[in-house]
Length: 276
Ligand code: SIN
Ligand code: MN
Image 1 (tube, rainbow, N blue to C red):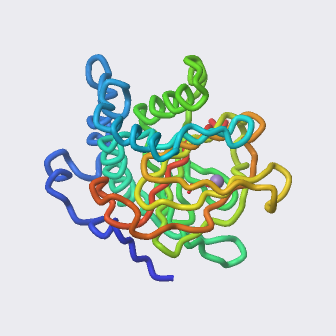
Image 2 (image 1 turned 30 degrees about the vertical axis):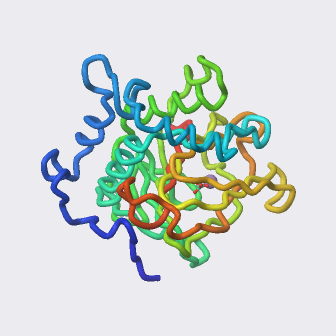
């Protein structure tokens, strides 16, 4: 399978902003996250930096895209990420996609190759286990899971569950970052390699897709098809934590290049592995 990365075609090339802040380093992401600045305000880590996205949320509300409980513990929150947060995440994902473990199509044990391209942070997911090193790619240890992502995950639970303490005990330690070109799909599966039943926090940027959210027993019906658009948050925990889910379709050309992603869809799922 060829590995075109529409929207990620500048991976490996330094952009001016990357050069300024030091490409290939997570420093930029930490800095953008605001997490390590005194007070920790702004950016991805704090509520204070969310200013530009709220008009998008208002537009979403007008269009009828509002918070929806798809199942017990499964919540869709449209337009949760502001445009600035989406740009920051795209930039951080670009850095991770370059290395230390490059983004790639995952090879499956029976010889298949996933159409989605994936890079992991914190722990490397390889069918069907987590490891610290990417033994199926280049043997390197994956990038650290940054503190600002932990804070982002906690804030996601607070907002999704509308409960100020919902994030208190949540410490995600891995994220799978998936890139979908216009033809990529993800079959129905459970996220079940984690030894924890803590919720999965899913963030989408770029092209919209159909996200199929099913039941915990079978890959088939009953399921609900949801459109996940750029900036949307989806959380599945509680009785829905081990529900089957997948992405049968991406709608090419529906993303806003202002996110920094000129084509394709980026999805980030944060999880708690329960591993040490
Ligand atoms: C996943 O199931 O790991 C990704 C889901 C998505 O791309 O929305
Ligand atoms: Mn999954």
